[in-house]
Length: 70
Image 1 (tube, rainbow, N blue to C red):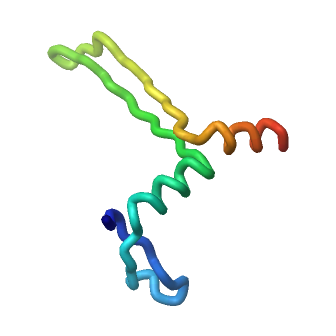
Image 2: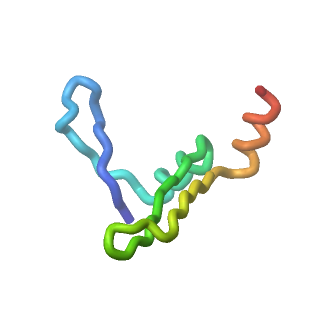
Image 3: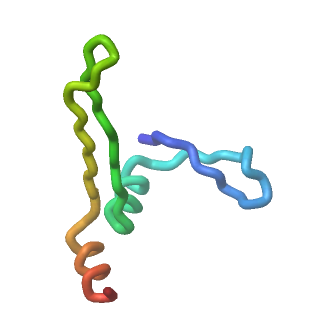
């Protein structure tokens, strides 16, 4: 199964090749990724609630390597 597209050459940024979902997941877990977002609930242009979210997605092995290096 293929999902996203990634450049296959630095010379031609418009050239793309399919990337398997397993390869994408392996790369994300090996290096980690931070997902962040803001949610604001407002009525009549009055902000009532603001929530800021951040999530770190990584494997335990990647986090342990980062901790050992730091």
